[in-house]
Image (cartoon, rainbow, N blue to C red; front, side, top):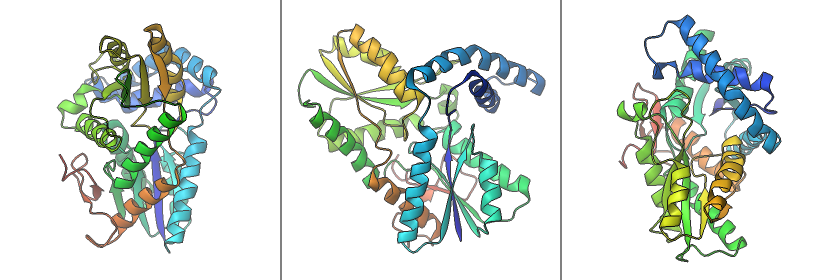
Length: 350
């Protein structure tokens, strides 16, 4: 039996202070390399300090949106993938493994072992391969398997945004929203804006091609919509005072006014679920900035339950477990995590 661990960042369900502080603390400890040279005691103290400083703002975001729907939507994606693999004649167990909340990656490994899984596939639900998301999640999966003493064949999947059906479903989501809102992307006053989760510049300097993947994905989706002139901005979380990806989405929205826009259609292209970064940072905070600048603000819902998504994920799983060239997709060794056993759709494109 195949085991598939859908790897995810995770997010607190209710967003209470008691949930948020340890969640943020785990994130800051995991990214301690952004401030190198600190002993472990100092790393933990610094993580707690950052978490307590950031928590009130995040708790307020969760209050505004009534908690996070991320886990429920992730569970729906896992169920859909399980059904799709079954329909293809695959005996598979699909499990969720969250990097920073429940259910943890360690718990997913334990369950897969207990249920007799004979081969494991790690599939990060991040279409754009990044250091702190896809690479970190796969590395944690490897560590947890090793720590458990379980000898199981493991294959990982890196970036997969170039999948044709994925690009099409993202374009369709924008198309549906625009038509439903009575808008026209060809109108000179309407600007299509893609919002991408930011990443520290240090990761890019170390070789991550996250920004190139983001640009390529946006260009592909815009092309399917017949849009040549689009904008791209990053949602950065600059807690440590280090450089992050530019331009920031707030500045992009403000700049759209000087370019003659009267309305913006924002698509959170890097996100696979509705969560605080979409429901609060975009729908509340970015809307406020846009409307304060005189823009009509429109935000495209994330197509997390699109029926085609399970087919995309199943294609990735099948192509990973089959012999090279015999699956539905042609995968390549992942450049973001080149230590073997990880494959992606990116390597031949950039």
